[in-house]
Image 1 (cartoon, rainbow, N blue to C red):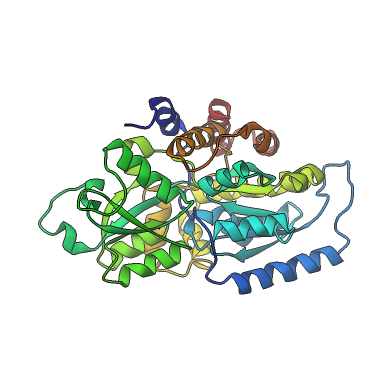
Image 2: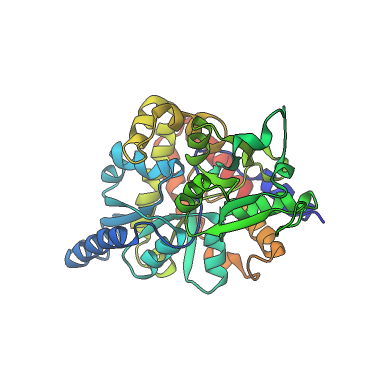
Length: 382
């Protein structure tokens, strides 16, 4: 039984713009250290006097804590920080590394974080479970895949997801990587579970744990988000597929910008300033590729060639557009998969912040092609 054509078409219609992926899951590898950093940042913020009412468009608060994963997908935050766009918009932004979507969600709900880059699937499941978190922007499209040990494709010139039948595959529950795999398996009529004609999915708490499990004899293949796919290939593993190359997964919305609903209402100017900085960062990534790679390397310390492949190789794109239509279509797909219960996504999706931020920048730069292209897509897929 195939996923509904309407959902697939909408997924294929949504944006293709930025590079990475970090779209995942549950517990943390370094929860205590990340929590300590975020908690310290939050304490400093609460002690400050930067929160004030303002009617002149200036940020109501200037100290912002941004949570991210170990992924090149979150480069907009890295570039905005390194190139001074946050500062230019009047924000003092601290970036803190986390290991899972669940940690990021907890950081938002405890007010230790103001913004988090969270995978689309966990963002949707958290919302459906009653978490008062709102999606207000994007961070990445596509950028995921699966890799397999080379002996399983030896002698083959080509293969598809069917190569995973009879194999133990490491993945992360409540992640876009897992949802995409199940969409592909369902499309080909392949069941999950133990057996030579099934795919046995073994779940781990984080992408890092799943990737490291590939060192075990019992694991044959593993899910991967950017930059793990390129990293695995450089280590001799073979790519089963990249989601950007699968027709029913093309232009899949991945990481989203997420904040607490209450905070978005309380500090609208601050969040618009944050969004302006990310839009400027996106423009920078389109016009300054070499420096973008160097900026990313400060946060994701791998070979610059691998960063370049993930960011500019055509496998994923990082863009701040909220891409509401694509994300809503993905919600319908994961509801059909049984990932979560259906719910009214409109109540927890804010496109006004991005819309206003982009309009401001276009007014200031009426002839800018990058901003014009962003506006064209937004108008079509809001």
